[in-house]
Every structure is written in structure tokens, then in C-alpha cells.
Image (cartoon, rainbow over all chains, first blue to last red; front, side, top):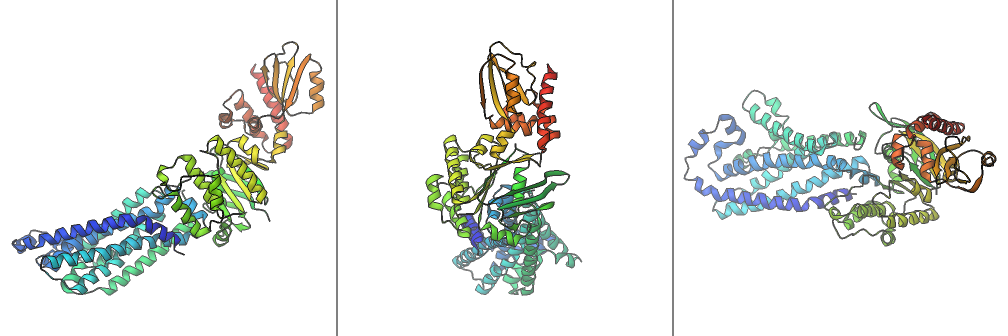
Length: 262
Length: 336
């Protein structure tokens, strides 16, 4: 078991390490800028954003290191960019193998289609976990380096609870990857969909559409709440894991019943 | 138990039929050729046999496993090798890594032995591979787990003539080992050298299923006659003589009738020399498949469209084949 996952994860390893180094560097750069923020009139800065933006990115707490990290790094890079990225990766996975005719050989091996889907998804867990292992170390070191402190438990939780969120984003991409034959289209749709869900959550949280927001993965993972208020949404994590499971199962069903490359 | 059993297998893509009610059986230990030009449905048939496409109707088994039963098919795939027509590997992986990957799932007891025959540059990345190298890597992966049945889609495409000959020898040796081999091709001479039996596919339908010997005799004999005085091919009317052409001071034609009739007809002329031999398989193929696409195979289009019509209506029927031939001769005579 797991030969497919191992092979695919290995293929992703270099890219993942490069990304981990890149995001760590970006995080350190953000953190290095934080001390100079102390001179800025934060209230005026916050006021400058429309209320929807303040809500969407939790901008009101940006004056503290926790709020700063939550807004600059976690709301933006982790929640939005990384969510889009894993959805993009997942959307390319099955569809590209099919489109490039590589799936024919994989399926000539004694493996079930369901196993191919599950292990392809399992291979995506590797970059998600690896990023969550490398980046917090850099962030913590950076925060200490500028003479600030951040609660270690909160930092750990902001990463730990991001894993179900990123898995859910990847699972959305995976389902699109089994639904569409053209990898490019699957990737674009995945990015569009995850971004649309992010917007739905951002907009509806300021209006009376909270039920609509619940559909979005971003509604179940709030880095600001974790870092600034120290509240952990375990229910949200469970919802995300269940959604992931449902999406992976749906992908398995879809891939089993489709003609390969048609 | 037959290695492959196909019964009324049909695959439709929407309105279009990829394959139309195919039925044939490949016996264990046989080398079976699956002939037809590109677009005839060979790849569709093969991909249906491997469970990559679900049949629209009909049924098929490989090594006894129903192709619609995934669990049974997975078990069978431990003993099946496959070389697809559109062979594609992970571009960034080395050949070595790809073989290791497949070996980790399916085994590789014959890998070293095969790498002495086929020599892809294993340490290099696939993106640097030539078509021939990729094809050799494909052959190694198809055979390295010592399968009982190997299904290959256009296996010699991209191989240079030397490698092709090595492949032919290899297939013969595999038959000695008892491996069942099913492969598609649009190159007749290649099939003739290694196959026991041949199925010919035309626009998704099976038009012939013969052993190679019968196929050759069905295609008739290639006759070359040198006459004492020139003979106009248009007045040389002999039932069973097909494709009559001038050759030097004589005539050349494909003959599907009885020898007696041929000899007594020739006796009415002054004959200097007669040569009766096997026709090139291309001519045999034309006999079944002589329409516009078929002629591309031969690059010689004289009257082939008309002959195609005659053959098209005569397909599959034994008795009809002579009618087809006759029609072809008449058409050619009519053209004059």
C-alpha cells in the first residue's frame, strides 16, 4: 500500500521545500517590518479600510504582533494564497495524469481507481504538513528575533487547525480533477471556486447571510481568533475534516465511473 | 481458458461508435495481431479490454476476468502487461525511478534480463528520452513482471529497424515461453513475421479473423507472366485476376482463383516465364480494406476507391471475396 502516494509525494518534495523556504522568507520579511509599524497611527490605518475589509482580514487588531501575524501572514498568505495553491495542485493531479496519457499505465497496474484517487490525495497531505512544520519555526524565531513574544500554543494551533482547512481546499481541487478531463480548466476552476468561497464568507459575515458563509472552508478556520483571542474552533476543524472526507469519497466515485481520457 | 474473449463488444462515444460489436477470442500462448489503420478502433478496443473504458454493450474477459468487474480485473492485471500507443511517463522522473515505481506495485523478476535486450538510458530523465528510448522503457515495464498476457498498442512505432527486428525476435522467444501476446499494428509486414493469427479492423468493425497462412492464401497469389508478344492488360480477362498491370513485356496480377483455370488461360498465350508467389501483405490488406484510408497504407491509389466499395459490401463473407475481386476487375476494365 501507499506506493502511489509515496511516488507522487516524492515528486512534489522539491517544490514543497522551495515553497516552505519561500514562505518562511516572506514571513520573516513581514515580521522584520513590524517594529516600524509602531510609529504608524494604527487607528487611522485601520479606519482607512472599508468595514468589509476590516472584517475579512481582522484588520482591527493589526497593532499587536498577534494581530499583525494574523492579518499579514495567516489571513492573507495562509488562508487565501495557500488555500488557492493546494486547490490548484490537487486540481492538476488526476486530470493531468489523464490528459498526458500517464494514467493508462498507472491503471494497468493492479490498483483500483479508488486507491489511485485516495493515494493521490494522500500525496497532497505531504506538502500541507511539511509547510506547517517548517514555517512556524521560522515565524517563532522571527518573532523572538525582533524582541516580541507570541503564545507558542496559539502559534502551534494556528498551524494545526489550518491543516483541515487546507485539506478541504485540496479536496475541492481533487473533485474537480476527477470531473474534468482538461487539467488547465480544472486548475482554473479550483482557484476560482476557492476564491469565490472566500469572498462569500468575507461578504456574508458582514451581512445576514451567515448560513451561506458556512459553505465556505474559510468560515471554519479563523487565524485571527486563534492568535489574537486564543480561541480554537474545533467544531470548525471537524466540519472541515468531514467535508474533506465527503469530497474525497465523491472523487473516488466519480473517477470509478468515468472513462479514462474521454 | 482463452486469454482474451471478446463478445459483441461495443463502445460508443455519444453517437459515434468507436468499436461496433467486436467478437473474437485469443487463445493462450498465441501471438495475435490486431490490424487496421489509425482510427479503425484498435486503441478503443484495447483500452476497453484494460477497463479504462466501460463497454457500451457486449462483454469481454482478459485472463478470465470480466473487464467490467474491477476487483477481478485488478487480480488479472498482476499477470498482464500493457504498452499503450500514447506512451507517456513522468517527464521529470528517471527511467530507473519509473521502473522502481511500477516494480513496487507489480514486481520485476525479469527486469535485468529485459534490460539486456532493450536498453533505455535509465539514469536519464524521461524528458531527455527519444521516442525509441521511451518505447523501450515501455516494453521493459510491460514484460518485467513476467506476465502471462501482454497487450501492446503499436509496439514498434518509434523503434528503428534494428530494434524492430530485435523486438520481433523477442516476441518469438516470448511465444516459446508461453506468453500470450496481443498487439495492434498498422504495419502488415510486421504482423506477418510474428503473428499466429490476425484480426482486421475497419471503422470499428471486425472484417476478418484468420490465421496468417489463410490470410495470405485468401489474398491469393502474386502472378508475374512474361509473354512472347505484348498483351494488353485490359483484354486479359480472367476470373479471379485482380489488379492487372503491365510489367515490362508481361503482366502482373493478384490471383485468387483455381490454378487450373489460370494455367489453361495462360496456355492460350505464348508464355516465356511464369512466376507465382506470395503477395505482399499490403495487397492482402487491400483485399479487405481497399478504400481511401487503406490506400494511404500503400500509397498507390489506382482504382482503390472503387475497389473499396466492392470490398466494403463484401466484407466478412468468404464467398463474397471473389465477388469483390471480380467487381474490382470489372471496375478497372470499365475505367478504360
